Image (tube, rainbow, N blue to C red; front, side, top):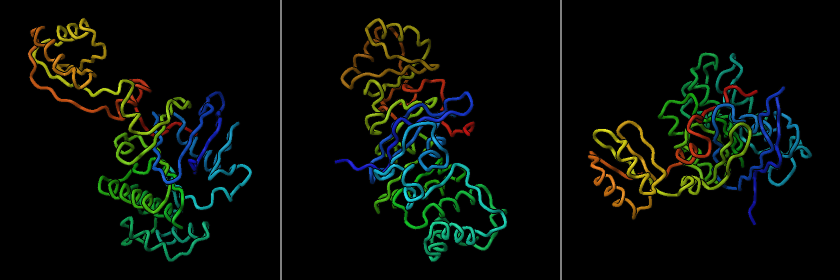
Length: 313
């Protein structure tokens, strides 16, 4: 029987006349790394805040480890590490004092504080005040505080936001390390490759509605499940596009001198033959497997861009 660490049922939230979250159901399995995707204003941050009981839903329920968080109160949130999208700390406290403050709040030993600051590369600045830190450094302290107490569940809202590439990579390694020790990880991201690289399951949210929840593998197959043949041509691509559509190949896209078409592997030679008969000169071609980005665009629409919930309450 599948064991769920997070479940939401019929979760709804409105702000004035805006329906931020419209009755979504999420199912996050124990031991999973779960990606939460959506364009700006999709409702991701609002959903995370409702899961953590930082924002009260208008209706619906949140279950943590099978227990209704509304009924359990603070007990439901014990053992959860949380990194908000914009980590903010007392400016006059040092990094170490900040960690010790959160250790007290969580009821865990302070002996972890120096060790975790070192883990995120902040040990050299543990006696420096947070108010002097760059955004990158503040985010790293935020990661360290989320790891206090070896949480069974990590909830990370845009965790690599503000991190330079080296520490973004280090954070991914930390996520994998924690997950290897049994921690369930739930994180939102506007970087589709991060979700494809790390996650087994994911959900796509758009305008407060859950569009799809599935394995990343199945989502990456898009709506067709077929690989993409990318063909760069010389001259006008229009005759080639017409020849392909006349031949019954409908999933054809054109970007400048590049024709993209989703076809089965055994249809590649047919496509190339059709272009040759249409007197279209092919400069180069390659095949790409369907990606999570392809699926995202198909489910959300090409005019939507994945990103953080900048306009959410």
